[in-house]
Length: 275
Image (cartoon, rainbow, N blue to C red):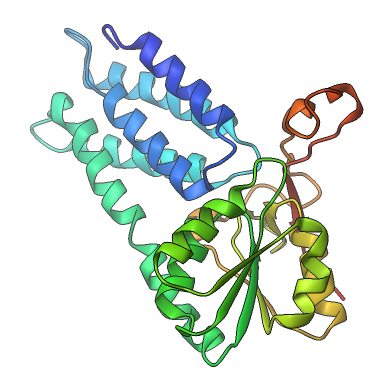
């Protein structure tokens, strides 16, 4: 990676540290990084290029242990690159760029299809509850929720990712309400449905999502309200169960800057079959 090692290391660190973006957005960043990193060094053979990118894919997969999508899309990139390099005549200089472009276009398709699939679930609803920020949930709310449906979003402390979703929904002209995470059970009493995204769907069908998702699901169950999880297949982990997945933690200072040593800041939790 002539002249780009520092850039790649900085981008890997940025993906690891990014707590405001959803897993789909981080998957896009990973694909863009892999595309740039696939520019061959002078005289680098297709085999050497493939080995180097395979090592980078392993690093991407380890960056966000609570998120399956970046690693799964990285594997798809590696397989696509291998096919392109095996096709005669091999064109290492263009193969990585073409693989990244094709997969980025493919990655942006599922959100629209999921929005269509969500229409029967959201039809006729007067109020919906969600939390944090998910580009998949955003697409479903804008594409499938009734125009007059009240969209209640828990702000998702400590980084307040839910406010990003609220701003985008409000800019689209949708009726919205912001609630604190502590009001999730109260807000569920008003909502007809809980709709959440997922950063990973484990092999035992448990969803891993932003902390606060399980209390919201428990409240929905207690009130007899439905809970729906929106996720595409690239968020499925065939390797990890809900008992095995690593739940990422943020720094204590994000919760309480003056007393970080007192704080636990678990960012994700599992939501399984509740009942």
